[in-house]
Image (tube, rainbow, N blue to C red):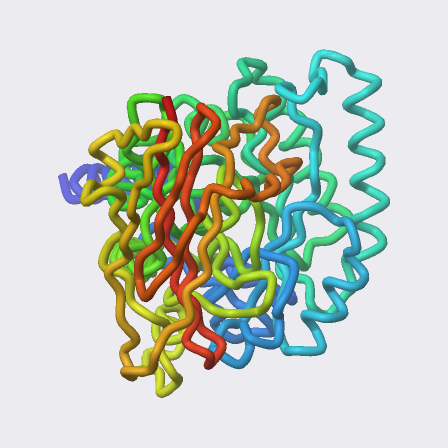
Length: 435
């Protein structure tokens, strides 16, 4: 009887062990410390990224310039999405004590790549192999980013087979650096496919802007049960903004972007540090994407928006002592807001006013310009160029207002930059339509 009882208890223990092991496999990735240069250690809710044996929480920026400022403001990492000028990027990052998530650009089907073409896929894999062998020992390397938003507007699941094969190859060539791939937001179908078809990936990277407020809940409902990184975040995206009747997206002011981005960072990145390994604010520098100011944190002249100051505080955990950027409450045109769908008549003047102030009380210099409304024709935002300003539409500027005299019909956008003379800028714009 005693033997039977103990045999039964032993059987139950074995059964519980097996069930627990199976559930652990289903519920999440488990990483054990192996003493590698960069590694992820832990299990769901308790993931940690380590570099040279020390915890390393990513406080990063996505972009290709101003690495010295990232370091000066408390950041520690850079994310780039391709290996153009990789030698220069890695060396510059290392010079300033930063790491790099190095993007390995893969062909995207919406741009003509065919993942059914085995020879093409094999050639791409070989190209990636050469890049990995070239840069795997660079001291600034943090991890490998295999592709960027590969599945957007594509229905070929073979793209994830290719990603997994590349991840497996990287683990063989370079076991010292983790692998990741980047998706936009958390589309359940895509994330579930990645979880199923890419077991070799160590971490999931997510570009998320306006939708970042419920990202944790969406991930919890997905099949991905591993660590993640917010690989891009910042202003509300133009695809998720409010629109005018003629489908012009309404951009936040730089002041709104700062508050908006900080709230989402605190709600997701800081609040979920047991699963989130860190983040990269987008974009550290400037680029034309729908407008020249939409994601630009720093102007072409090097002036900083308020979001740069917010990131310094978030990275350091301290209140910045630097001179603050001007604050913009709102911009109006003929006493209306952009959401009011403002139509102007040719030859009839219209007055725009910006309501703003400098936190230090200094006088502000205002610069105005009108640009034609633009939209990427091929969907490739990386190829966008800032359009030439429309000449002759701005007739008079005085104080914080300007008079427009529209002439030619079409969709336009009025921009205003407020400069404080101390290296800071505030930006706003207003889409309108001339009938």
